[in-house]
Length: 282
Image 1 (cartoon, one colour):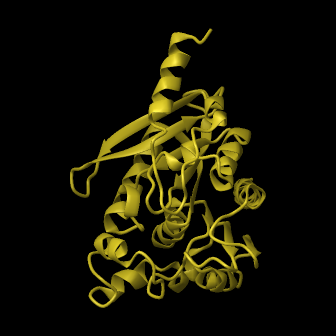
Image 2 (tube, rainbow, N blue to C red):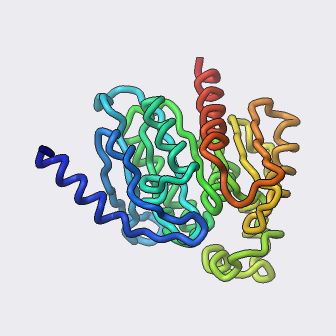
């Protein structure tokens, strides 16, 4: 029989399994989520504008309260929310949960302004505040920022803007140039405070391709040659530039790939960055 606590958590997670996404779709609640010691939905009041913002914390088994821990932050794709990397069974999400469990990492999945964020100013401010909250709460060793699609873009943008807060980056099918990117323009304009024509400096500021020297931390990117939702060109250019000063870079480019990353490629990307950050800490 289920214990009352386990039954309560199972019912809570099942109720949360109603998230929909346009770029990364929910299949169902992932069975492996139950392997975490706890899955807790958290709320904070944003310094940026006083709104309530949410994030999910997945705690690995056996983690003691004051023990040193590394954190894997996972940023969802356009149209989804904080539950995407917690619930989905697709390769990118499954790989993130698996590496968090295998390396006893705390996994943190924020809304970062929810469905159509694109790491605009509000989402950026929330991320800075969230990392401070995490540092105040846990004995943190390293923080790896990752994401898929819009989240992969956001991971690159945030690391370029705040490299001092990030020890490693995993970007799965993201873009590094928002000036040239053509999709989801209404959502991006809302997030950035205007269109490319109105606030071009904001689009340039949030385009990692123009800030390659900020990437001194381990970096892994995955791209698909036939990805017509988030084309790979800008990330490939960014990787080439970063490699000139940073040897800890991995790019997995599938020439026949589309807008998704397989479990194997996602796992390789995560493992590369985790291994590189561990080596740097020795």
